[in-house]
Image (cartoon, rainbow over all chains, first blue to last red; front, side, top):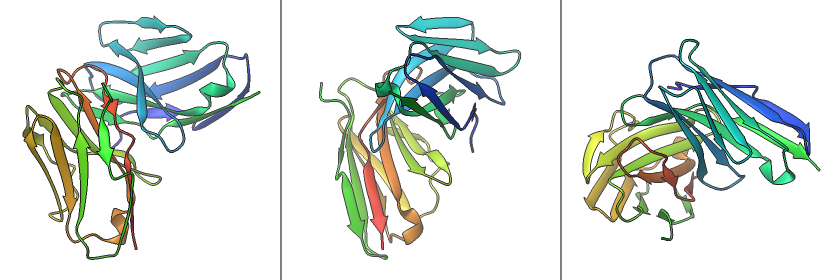
Length: 109
Length: 113
């Protein structure tokens, strides 16, 4: 069963623009993580935010967490064609991750 | 470290045959997870181990599926007998402490005909 649900399901932007992806979840969590998956490859861990944190940055990535609304957002600034991939949020409640169905991001050169 | 290593990358088998998927986690990681990915159901956790001991196998779909971890550097997922609906990409992932980011393998694409 999916814990996290990403929104939108698909996003197409121009290179250089920012991409914002959202995730909502249902139950209390220890942390929330974002992963990227390129076509035909495994998932790659991008960033983790703990339940007592509100915002975190890593390079061009910014993630926020609002535990009162049970939601998170991932912002990719100054997008590049190489950012084209599927992005998943995953929630950690009891030492195991539950993934959403993912967002397909297309960055047009 | 070479990362999480899965084999084979691709497997095509006939319905009714036994299939064994293999995984070598990152050295030092104490958690190992098996996931299945399909278009319809997304990523599903099948089973996970901590220090080689199965902790939660509630995601294993049927008795046809079994998983073992005989030591810290090797795990198998076996399907016997295989069915067409088992066709999916199977991922192995490992982590340290179970509360940090996971490292995923490249997956095994299983096709049962």
